[in-house]
Image 1: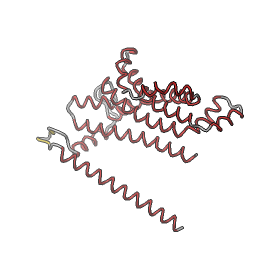
Image 2 (image 1 turned 180 degrees about the horizontal axis):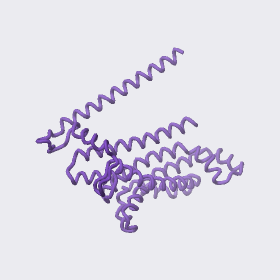
Image 3 (image 1 turned 180 degrees about the vertical axis):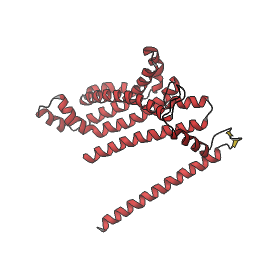
Image 4 (image 1 turned 30 degrees about the vertical axis):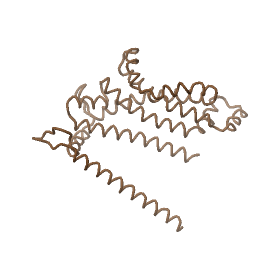
Length: 271
């Protein structure tokens, strides 16, 4: 009983210290930001806007996030949803392809060794490097952006799945063969559960890559989306809105990562 109380007290103390330290970091960052900002002259900021100006614009944008006043004037909520829609299509398609291909490679060590050099060559290529090729071949900006997201998502999940499946204990696969399970039976009952931690780790890396890719692609191509919003506000010299959009991009990325972090913990708990 005393041991449990001590452990609970230690965890509570650690949580308090983490929150305190995190709050101090935030206050320090805001202070440095304020020192580096330029005060407004006549109600107009001539240089980098400070936290107060960004907070005011943030409140205005978040109070009406879904307005639509034409192609170049949409609320931040619509911009984010547009970007997330592209991510959902490209990321979803790439995840299915990457998991299936990764399982096939992981089950065949010779094939994995043969394909690994090409995976390692293609994986570090910037997704935006594919944009001119996709724009030229399919001649559709939305499709090109989705393909860029597909390419940014594919390789981390594929590599993690392949090496996760390759590391499955052979006893599990032998038992599945003795039970005469079909390929899909082995896939769902043996392979996926055993390789799930590695697969989820790859998916978690990929969702971050997909979110980065869609923002960059939208800045290049235009249309709607949070990336286009940033570029459009820069063209309008509205730095307060640019900073606000940057904070929104970071917040959405954090939410996506937290979702996969919870999934990873749930899988680890069930093992």
